[in-house]
Image (cartoon, rainbow, N blue to C red):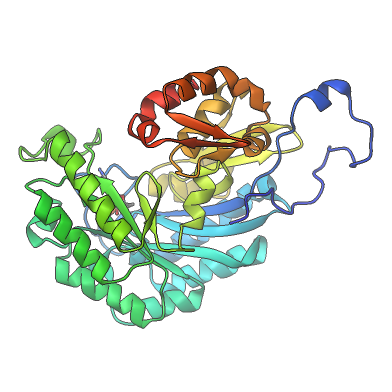
Amino acid sequence: MASTPSPAGPRPGTPPPDAPRPVEQAATPALLTPPLALYVHLPWCVRKCPYCDFNSHAAKGALPFDDYVDALVRDLEHDLPLAWGRTVHSVFFGGGTPSLFPPQAIDRFLQAASARLRIAPQAEITLEANPGTAEHGRFDGYRAAGVNRVSFGVQSFDDGCLRRLGRIHDGAEAEAAVKLAQDAGLDNLNLDLMYALPGQDLAMAEHDLERALALRPAHVSHYQLTLEPNTVFFAKPPADIPDDDLAWDIQERCQALLARAGYAHYETSAYARPGRQCAHNLNYWRYGDYLGIGAGAHGKITLGAEQAILRRWKQRHPAAWMAAAGTAGAIGGDERIDPERRPFEFMLNALRLHEGFALADFQARTGLPGNSLDAALAQACERQWLQVEGDRVRPTALGRRFANDVIGLFL
Ligand SMILES: C[S@@+](CC[C@H](N)C(=O)[O-])C[C@H]1O[C@@H](n2cnc3c(N)ncnc32)[C@H](O)[C@@H]1O
Ligand code: SF4
């Protein structure tokens, strides 16, 4: 994914390059439009998992796939003025369980989106899949529709752990699902694993990772189980969740296993084989732009002409969102991000990346001068949380460990 601004051409209201610029403007860096991505939320699951706080709803009866796709197209059309003339560099179908949608529905949406938006020919197009929904022929259909990356929610290969997590598949089904996708020619696969699971010890967590690595995925996301408010696990936490020391040991051990297997740790929870980092997520972490369509989807768009950053989110409930899609009634909220808040938002994302960020990108994506960070950067460097080399700012290993404290300096 290019980290340069998208080839959007001059934006309305910006002066031609050789026009004299007012003195105040020359002193303040301009907010430039970064690369653009498209997030599409598909909100249903076979069953709600007890740890999950995503906007996902257990399917009751037949799902309205066609009506939902029609609503997605209306929602996209309504948001199009936010992105005129810009190119989409990645598409992500997230959920919920997007793999509940038949390939024909994904195909119809992608065709409709391509007719309305410029999608780069090499765009990464990811679909999240629950292994319990995999069936023969499905992945060929997704691939034919244009999907070129699948992200499997495996969580664990241990049948006991999977039962405790309320999953709808066992370990063997997860392996079979990944192989079905590989047989369909999809080689850019991510496996989501969670660790520090109820009843899990170090050997079990290592064994989960070994089974994942045996499938040779391009990418692994390794998340520590968190107890999120408004979940069953939060209300009634399992008694045997590993303590912080064990969770730390699991993380260290698994990091070493992943490194030995050739996966670079490039973000807090993300590991990739060379060239297989997730372009869509990288764009979030680099404070890029994205349209968010579908129930509860969030978007962030830089409005060059207004020198503003807009966050827009959609109504969360699928039925309410579908009924209003294509009108302003589907919008849950619009918020312009004050310049004072932008450094914190930028750091919240950029400091997850081991590569950190370039000060030039901070300026372009927040519209603020790099020296507005001087005081916080000096403190962070003194505590050895960050290091600055020329234009680049990187978190140290210590900084990654105390990430919340580091980010707090930029509030
Ligand atoms: C929206 S789910 C996508 C996959 C699909 N819905 C599934 O579960 O098979 C995204 C991922 O977030 C992770 N996740 C969800 N809830 C979590 C929690 N409470 N703690 C840690 N990771 C979590 C899981 O690894 C999950 O696969
Ligand atoms: S299948 Fe995925 S999105 Fe659905 S409830 Fe479980 S973790 Fe959440």
